[in-house]
Length: 219
Image 1 (tube, one colour):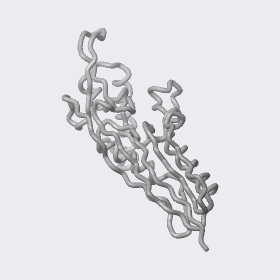
Image 2 (image 1 turned 180 degrees about the horizontal axis):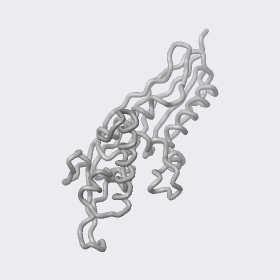
Image 3 (image 1 turned 180 degrees about the vertical axis):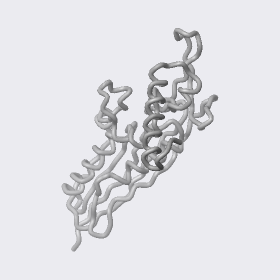
Image 4 (image 1 turned 120 degrees about the vertical axis):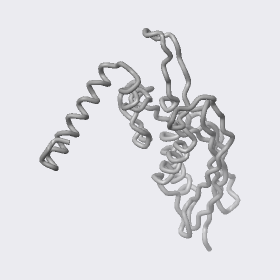
């Protein structure tokens, strides 16, 4: 006779991203790279439900939410993009992960070990804000509950702009290329920052050198 285990529950998570589309892309990509919770007749399936979304009154031409800070040395407002801050409560959504899966030919201990690995990996890549999970097996054994979200919330790996280590978090490689949260070419066009000018000049020289090598003449 086959032995079964079961996992039921929800997690409320807050993926990084400056827009709802970015959040959804990052969340789906993270889930696609998660370790498996297995059964002989199928693995764990996770359903994504988008919760309530907050709105913000100002957006740029890329539909990214922005806030404003004043008082810099040049007496003009400085754009601060919410992509720099993973908890984008001013523009973004809370997301629910719904799990309702059964696993054949697995013991409760085995399923718990696989799910713990899955949950720990997830918590590093998206912020866990709430959790209610029930794990049970056959034989009338008392179910196991996971309801304390705080240990998993604390596992979250912040972006390199926040953690002060310079080491990018895994999900940062999924975000657009930002310089202080703002696309480099637009910084170059609308600001007067020597470091940006130097970087743009370096990129132009590199592109010209590649073009000359490929086509034998300057662009």
